[in-house]
Image (tube, rainbow, N blue to C red):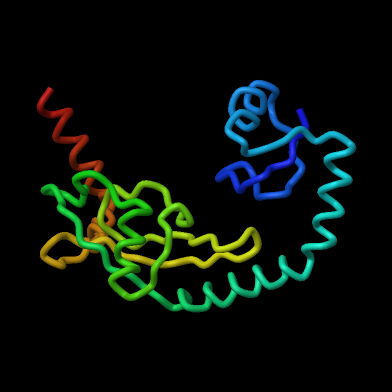
Length: 182
């Protein structure tokens, strides 16, 4: 089923995109929720005409998104979380926690614009803030425990010393002792 999105749908597409989706998804969710319309010839012609008329507005929206994204460049966050005996966090760190940490730095953002996979251990991670379909910013952050202690660095175990094979003379002596013992 071909549709035209009327609103941005996270994970699917952006407003005014023409997409092909499964019939059930379009018929049972997108159309009834008002998120899309059927992509008929008439609707596509109307969309193209609207896009021509809105071209300068779209350029301004993108420029505003780029200006907003510049505020977030170079920002790094430290997020405190309750931690178990190891490095595991009780719960997880998600978009809401990232948005709250950004708000503490004076940068307001809707948590829906942030994408991140669930963070469940201490360490360094990266979230992505999407301001426009073509404008996004990576925001590095570190998860530390409530005391501010960082994740323990992985320490490589010392490599065992190479075991030297016994010399042939020693082997012959051992074999001789075994034969005498028998």
